[in-house]
Amino acid sequence: MAVLRDSLRFFDERMEFDTEVFNEDLEILEPSEADIAAYSKYVTVASKMENETPIIALVYIERMLKKTGILLNKYNWKRILLVCLCVASKVWDDDSLENIHFPKVMADVSLLMINKIEQIFLDLFLNYDLVVKGSEYAKYYFIMRTLADELRDET
Image 1 (cartoon, one colour):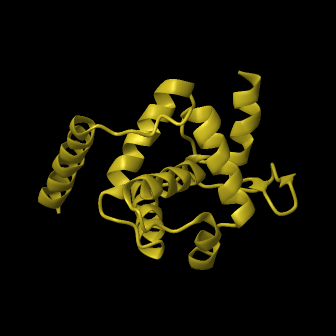
Image 2 (tube, helix red, strand yellow; image 1 turned 135 degrees about the vertical axis):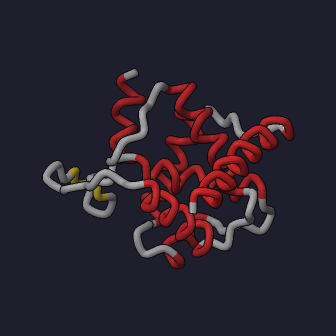
């Protein structure tokens, strides 16, 4: 449990990878649904990810939450979402970006950061449990489709 807690600090936005400094005074705002959607879109568009990638990433997020008991919060949601999208893209798409390319298309990502959080995510959080069955994909797809339809109906 201590290893999990220590590793979780790398997902905290207050952790600066280049200087290895943890800035507790950095003010982080609570994200809105629009903030989360915008960041998801930013990552998927900048990285030219396939349309299926966010659904697989959602499977990984829930799998990680169940396996570890980690809670998403204003400090860690962005890096968890990023690594889930990146790993999902690599699993789904044979032509996905390699880690060295992410910093070239996303200004807020460094190679050191993406390598470290991917390693922790795969080794510790998911234990390389990356297979997504068709039925599992369909479940998440239809949940997301229903939510999207409801949002569209509201607007």
